[in-house]
Length: 169
Ligand code: FE
Image (cartoon, rainbow, N blue to C red):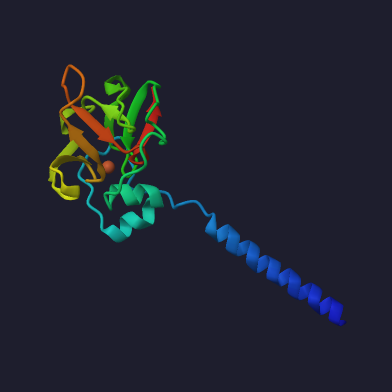
């Protein structure tokens, strides 16, 4: 084998290794076996399991309580008819008929799809007293509840787009 042939083979092997690495990096997140639009039983999983079944953005908000950027997010100005579900577990959370145009920068609703779809928790972080809104099935952090919404409830459920999945009617 000539030196030129050796370099050609080494180059080919190197390319294959690099290509397989790139494929690994862009591999889709594994399917979430806990996701369901019909199962309403409480879902309690370890942080390790959540991390393995959620995309990074959803995990950061749902399990680490981070907040996405206002205005430039998926559902802030979304007006289609349908149902907004929890992106972590599929639980049906809000109907499009309760969505309203707020100036907050995040999707806003005046009521949940049904009274038992959400959980509420006092939140004293960031030097404020707020009401945290969580998914009633999987306890994912969704956003916060304020009392400055429109009629008929005068409430504003301020929710991160990234933890919502939209199912068209
Ligand atoms: Fe959920």
